[in-house]
Length: 392
Ligand SMILES: Nc1ncnc2c1ncn2[C@@H]1O[C@H](COP(=O)(O)OP(=O)(O)OP(=O)(O)O)[C@@H](O)[C@H]1O
Ligand SMILES: [Mg+2]
Image 1 (cartoon, helix red, strand yellow):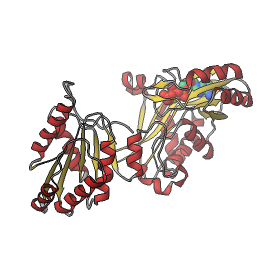
Image 2: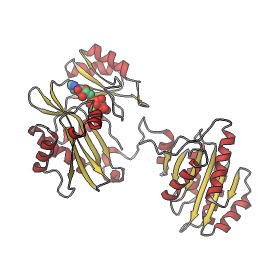
Image 3: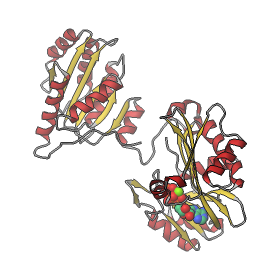
């Protein structure tokens, strides 16, 4: 889960990192009042979970409370890379003497953490990294040792950050480890004209696998910017990712579902989602999965691809039959059952004889069938494309 900037700012403050005084609001009049409390002159910042807010016009200086209200009115409701701005943060302006970049990120390739630091922080950091990679230092961190004062000094030196940043670098590492984060980024980390080091922006990505021990973020991930279908699926405990195609996919096992997406994409159709019902899937899980997929208006056909292992195909077929009784099927369903007890499973589905349910014996055959059904329903709209997992 990504945190909003204002949440990252609060975390930083808790860990003793200096941040500008700030308030969050969802209304222009609230912005005016906040600005008044903050001293009049403020920076108005869109709160969206995407980068490049400044360049999109989502970060603006307002000279007084009236200007803050006007600016908030412009920024609230703005669309930044597909994210609607529902809240703005008003922050006290800081007299900047230098902008630096620093982040800690999990580097899956090396199986370790990486510190990234640069003396050229600010809104052009992506450009700097692309054109002059030598201006961006990358320092591996031994996770067992972490960022000690000595390590922080090494990072600061390599990135060309002033020595006063060492203390902040150590504290940011504490944020990463104690909060179970996969990414902590500060851009810009600034030196003020008075020589203080402040975090002016913050991006924190928490490890969802550690949510159970990070109770402060709650268990409901219902954010404004989350896909409503993903939210509905999450509420039912389903492992679902919305994609932008038209063939709904249900399978057991993440590997099988991923291959199913590929095979469907190879049939000139696009998968509408990823949904892994896992091993030992009950009728309830099948019904929940089907109801989520069928409520996606983009879905034109559904492909249920199950390879029976520990979960026998007859149990899965029973689940589908029960699901058909509880979910109103409105779109064609192609089912491929193979593996453990496949013959019995197929017989159960044949026995149910639902007019919208078809069976196929192979994964390729079923994918072709589901793709053809989706394309037939979609009319002449071409739907060739490839699968890609998007979203958070
Ligand atoms: N409180 C502040 N006082 C003075 N200047 C600020 C303040 N906050 C931001 N700025 C200036 O605005 C620039 C952009 O701000 P910020 O880094 O928060 O947005 P952004 O980088 O565009 O957003 P993102 O990190 O999402 O891409 C900063 O580099 C800094 O120069
Ligand atoms: Mg920034």
